[in-house]
Image (cartoon, rainbow, N blue to C red):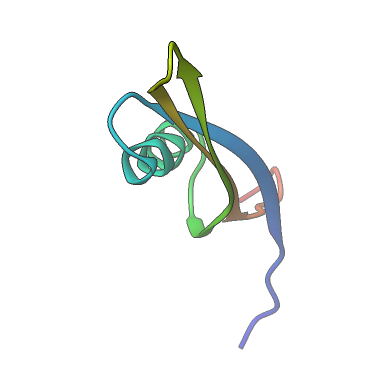
Length: 72
């Protein structure tokens, strides 16, 4: 097996519907500009509250992707 290197970034996805959709938004947005996404780990969940009601779900997500040299 060839050795590989992966980079990890942290993003915050936001949804007015659910944490699952917030996490998916982070992954889907990352996929627009990064290639070879491998693992997504939800590290934190929180909510924004206004007037006693949840208005926004937020998911902090660590996403790893394969690191490629400039020549790849």
